[in-house]
Image (tube, rainbow, N blue to C red; front, side, top):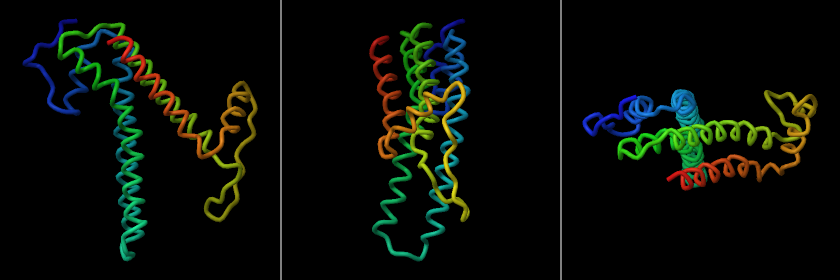
Length: 181
């Protein structure tokens, strides 16, 4: 596929998606650009709605703790959406500079999917033993089946340490980027 020229360069995050999609020769990277972009958009919508809901529920109360809760929502959104966008943005940047190659694109696409899987695994690890939902006490399901040992391992992680799972995926993504640079 022909390498895009500097006149085809993208402007901002939204332009990086079609640019990276057109510039890469890696099918895996192209699939991640689409899937990662959709997940990033979905996560953004969810967090915007969560902040709007939080503001609506706390409208009459004074600031302080509630203001920091809103900021915490935004911080968590950035920590999730940033790594979802990173592979696409890094691939677009490399191709814009004329140094892109298929191995780098494939490696970053792989780490992007690794981060998506790690978000799910982190959610499983953060699930409490039992919780109340709509007035009903719910107990987490037993770890059985083919992935039973993996689920048991995730359940063994203390709830406050669950963010370590996606953080490891982000660290791997950074190492892969550095390795193929």
